[in-house]
Image 1: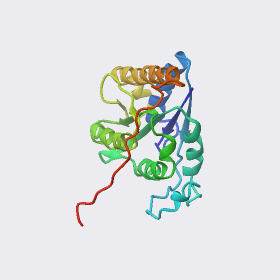
Image 2: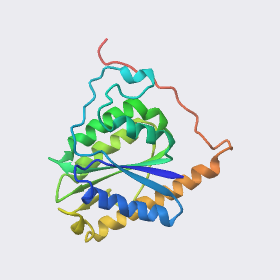
Image 3: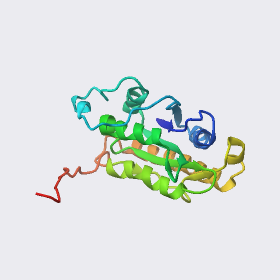
Length: 207
């Protein structure tokens, strides 16, 4: 079993990364592998709604990290989406990546457990957490619970390591993720392996 973690911060080894490593440590302690992928600090394209990804070959834009992440998504058993707070919202690069990732590779993540985490110096965390959770909720995924909102505080990694409550929350995410993955593993080959899938129906407000 393996959990794919996305570090959406432009700072490779900063606060978001530090929080993800705490989750990774708890996963390892419970026998679950993980990998942290950094989206980098180079320009990232946003989705233009072209529909090219419907061909099944990933996003039509191949000049950034999105399709690389997408290939990792295919074989992962669970996911953690991490972002820093910029102006009371997840940073723009993370949003651009997740928009395209869920359009192009969302089908590979359905019915798998996921959690989102955010980091900030002070405020904007709950609003950002809400934004990230919407990706999980719209894609038929299994939200991983914790003991409080999934956030850490600090201006740098050393300060995050002083946020004892935030670290406790991260460890709880790791523990609950491991538990859910093991439950899903034990259900394989039984009638509980997958729920009854309700077909999606789309309606418009304007006819």
